[in-house]
Image (cartoon, rainbow, N blue to C red):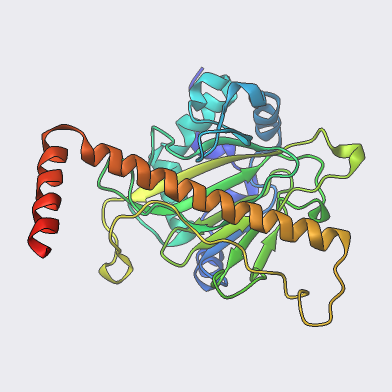
Length: 308
């Protein structure tokens, strides 16, 4: 039997070229993005949901080295036939051309290692602070250009949190410009740039739904070149702690939820500071090792004595 056409993973109405998608992407606020509901073929997306890996199968170690409420699996082809078909499709010239036509970004490259991508699963209480993503592929000289996220949550309400948030400037604004619920078979494609600030708010499931998790598939795409005016020095993912909600104004009486939010924000800042100290300590330890570390020690010693 001949292999299925790559674009057959998409809903049939999306397979033909459509110039309106490119225009919608380019003019979206606060930065270029598309929201496409009923994105994948219905039967195919149900197969992906049925084969979604158990939380325990993924990597749930956070940036601080501790077990957390997020689990990821980046070896998609090991998750069964549906995920192997997804992998075959998104690497195909036909799909890359379709995505380029939809966004106006040509010569897109697929990441066969799914670095940072793959399946993502988040438990109740988890959130993600506003950030811009790393801008170059970790091992190749490729510019990161697009994030494509497909949500796999058959039961989800916007009031439950976990909504994708798009910000203009999270260092000065408490509220996102766009808030997108992670409902089933919804796709969000957005440009990755120095201004593509995004996050998701805290998952707060009702008691009757507390066993649910927020599930998605994250796919990243690259190009070998990028317009000079959009190019920045290589950097890792850059986070900004959330601003206080606008309701915290003079005269506001704190509620139980307000106190919980303030405690959470302080805890997040403390964790961020601890992580930065740990990274600094690790870097200093690495500097002190070996011949380079010894030479650096001698140079510092000579400098201090010279100053005296």
